[in-house]
Length: 293
Image (tube, rainbow, N blue to C red; front, top):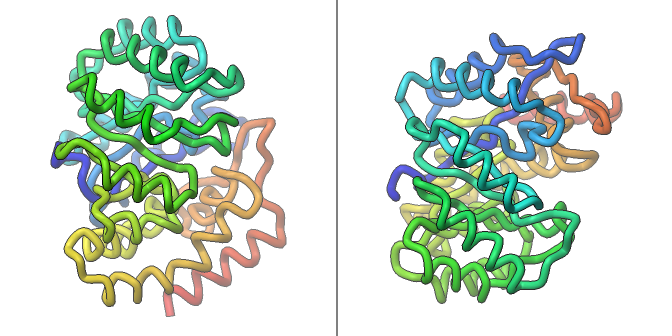
């Protein structure tokens, strides 16, 4: 799955002031990313506010991104949830022909056991006609998918090709990389740890900040994949302040504040999220200025 090497971005869903989807801004962000080195686009993840986007809006978003992309880079579609049957139904009713893989988040709220997580993804793997990236994000789901469970799925199902690991746990990353099947990919879901993961033998990142600074971020990850630690860390240290700022309040309010400062889209988010505070927006603008100088 070389298509998933490097920097993928979890694309935002821009909204107009009336909370409708801003398709023009969305297409602009996609073009901006592809023109500046992003390797693939992830649609309808947490950063895309997937839980507050309707089914019809999701379909329309896929159309807009597909048109803007025009087959230039691979696309990954978020299809996940804590109702296994509903996830399978969405897989069965979605045209996945233009997608390289789906990204399926570990069930949230329900807090299943490790065996429950395994059975959930087993059912999805048996239903899904294209490759699957597992998505472990215990900070949002309140349940960590242990490395043994991830690796069991990787060994048992040929279409489970990768995990987006976002537990912010270095030890867990290293355990996955050390024990994974040869072709299984460990993708960082933590922007602050992504370079270390790439250097340790991971396959890159699905990034939030990367969509605002695609040139710098994708170059840093590529240097990491090439083992050029010194050059890569130079970029990492430059990007550290802005990376930490965007997660200070909530995601995607932080990244939308950055995109607004770069004139790429509005910073509107849908409730229960709220826009970044004025204080954070000011500090984000300052961090961008410092990066550009």
